[in-house]
Length: 392
Image (cartoon, rainbow, N blue to C red; front, top):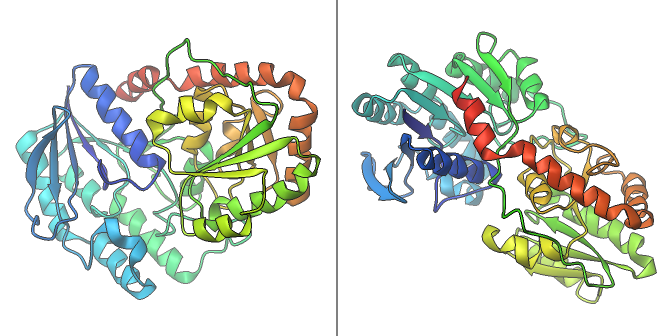
């Protein structure tokens, strides 16, 4: 089957878990013998006309969508400029015609769209105008909130957000099939009038399973906990460090922090004399198993924002690591309380302390939770995912 895959970012550009999921799907489809090609953006302003390159023997179409700046640089721009950029992005006719011309030339049997912010929200219209089957996969709330973030306790939507959501609802115009990794995200959009005529399917994100012989090596006398993600306020890292400093008064535990972000320097300075926390910086995904998860008992996901289906939970399960996480967004759909992890009330220090203490008191049951996490990971095998996706 000839399959087009469209995502705003593709390696070497990446913002988060959505790009990892997209890249893995591309790789697996190619491995299965499908004729695949990718449509994505270039950050170079002189590349306004699409061009073709090969990467891992896969044809990649890139172009620079006409706008105030590249999507790759959005985090560095002032609010007023981002506001104008979002308006242009939503109605980007240049992107529309570039995508349409590529699809007209290639004539794929199926178009798989993912995150389209940055490549333009007229993309589904371009696909539909050619009569091509489109399966669109949701990753976050960016069609309602341009930032893709809704913070716990700040759920209100202003008039600008409501107008923006209505525009996106019209532009997306009911793709044939809409896939969501969580029921929570699908319900979120359905309640706001999206995708009423689309076939809606909940399909958790896929993972590439590791060698079946992989196993933990817990020789340390400490109980190791892990935070893996962006060092940003909405990810709950400051909240976690504050709670962990109280939890670890007995000195039995250690928190490993993997990742980078705007709070990195501030937090390192604040906790430079704390012997219970270790900042490891960025560690590439291919090294996480043997350098981090090998020695970790629990992963903590203390998100203060509404998460769809965090990649860190999938990665933890893949490496037989139970998860202690905020009960927010789609997270509770992945974690069965007391079986493969624990859930706590978001931004509630007492609730988190209780679950941390429970994990420590029940450390004798760790092997059972670890095995359950590994079994849970089997549900998300990318081979099963591809079969279900192409059956839609």
